[in-house]
Amino acid sequence: MLHVLYLVHDVSDPAVRRRITMLRAGGARVTLAGFRRTANPIADIEGLRPIDLGATRDGRFGQRLAAVAKAAVSIGSRLGGMPRPDLIIARNLEMLALARRAKSAFGAPVPIVYECLDIHRLVLRNDLLGKALRATERFLARDVKLLVTSSPAFIANYFKPFGQVAAPIELVENKYFEAAAILPGDSEPAHGPAGPPWRIGWFGALRCRRSLELLADFSRRMNGRFEIVLRGRPALSEFPDFHGFVESEPWLSFRGPYRNPEDMAAIYREVHFSWAIDFFEAGQNSEWLLPNRLYEGCRFGAVPISMGNTETGRFLNQQDIGVLLSQATPEGLEAALGKMEEYRFGKLKARVLARNPRTWSYDRSDCRALVERLRSLTTVPGSFAAEALA
Image (cartoon, rainbow, N blue to C red; front, side, top):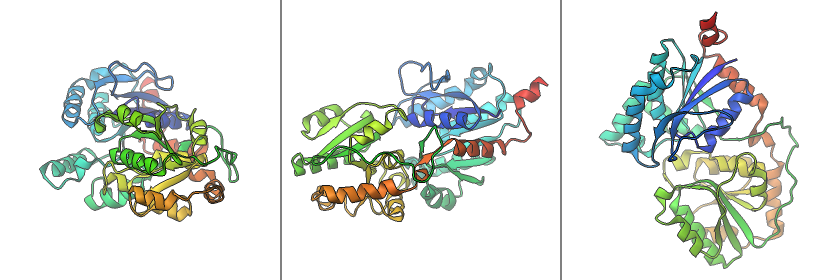
């Protein structure tokens, strides 16, 4: 069984849980180590007890660098009690630095996979800091065996033009994970709430202040004909008073966090549309990404809303589904959605449900294929740990 050491920047990130689930469903054994964004260590992620590397703070770049430097000194002792892995996956740039330290501590040629699912705005700067970060990434990634990323636009706009990683690239989209096999024709029943009021669901990592203000303005403009439902983890560092703002808006509601995948069908059945727009790093990462909520919403029949000039918009245009905006204004939203009625919404939803569900989801066969791809990177068959015991 392939033994993977998974080094992550935030062990509580729901996407980390999804990747662990995929790796284990594909037949791998996983050891999890990483930082946390919580005051106290996290005891359990999918039955795993994470190796705690300390706390970091969202948006505090300097503090994160200091935490990485501190962890680099002690990572050998932190990992000393575990069997030597066959493979190390480093999620994000700071974890790539720690992966190289861990590899040295194991004293063996353990392959490293670099998983990069966002392009941080700092590495795109043209000043000394941006150039230094890109140079650091190139140096740390000089001998990684594989780059895993989630959007073709990351490859076309960053990795290839800047020559950051010479390794082969594996595209692993942010799809929903299905425990059972899925086949063409499989879909959720087309039921849901009647409208109006029409409900727009904005779920996941809530970090875009411009989206929040735009949705609030639009809902007021529609005077209750549209309601906005927020769920997930708000990045409070990006909002002066997230909860106060939402409570002051008559047509906005925040319904707290949710479990993925356990709650996904239920929360998306409560809404008509899925907000698949992010202005957090406009013109860069936000324009290039294909977000989790795109796949999750479509899997359960919510009609996606996106800007037309983004990678998400281009993807939806190819699929001939969704509502694509030309301008991010309350007036633009009103022009696209304001006259919504049941017949038109039924057609929009039917087009989403008509797509092959594998467009939106990975199942166990995909997980096995991913693990086999990772296994092919190891230098010898079987596991280093088994070899050491022979």
